[in-house]
Length: 309
Image (cartoon, rainbow, N blue to C red):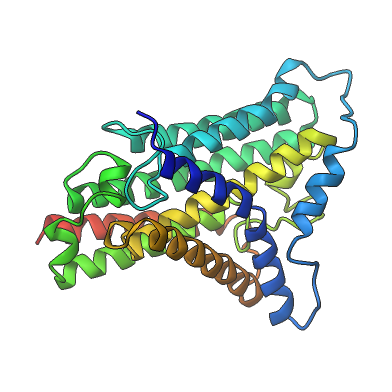
């Protein structure tokens, strides 16, 4: 069944998505005493890159060319599983939270294969770092979903975020609020890692020894690079929607108000990313696993709070 409100909401957020990295970058610039690029800079960059031609190395295969489109399709597929309008998702089925995590993992896998396909040891180094850190973010994400499933009594993301509030959401019990806060914090830490933001990574870095995500996409150009940059913005929107959905259950609002609340929440999440980037330094690579284990520990603690009450 086609759910038009969910589709319209998804299209709206896909249009807004490139604004979110601009808000984060602008907030970071303001707090560090700089003017910074315009809020709409990513829109300009996407338009400029789309008018250019792609350049391919003679050592690359079809995998290098397919990876950007695969990344975009998997990220859009993950977005389709979220009830962004507060009641329905474009796609819904029991256990779709597993599909959500799997789609994001598939997109990362395709991009890592593209980096390895170049035959560059430099990109291979970045690919190794990316998949290593992903092994720490995925448990945190799945543990957070498990806790939400316990609270809502549903194995679907639509049930966790978009159905009528269950007694677990509305009882006002202290352990429920504490669990929600822990999950939201854990998901925000995962957001910083998955979207290559400080303190895990720096999208503006050019230091060879510290690059992670940027080194994987170093050989991409033109429309391919535009697709990768846009996919990153959509991923920021997706994880931001998870954080907002935990703190403000969309089912508590009507359709239009839910979309407005989600849009405003995404702006605040993007601004908070900028605040974190201006207040913290990039972690040493040996410290990043500890940072991500903290996210998993917060989700595990939230699960224990729900199970023991």
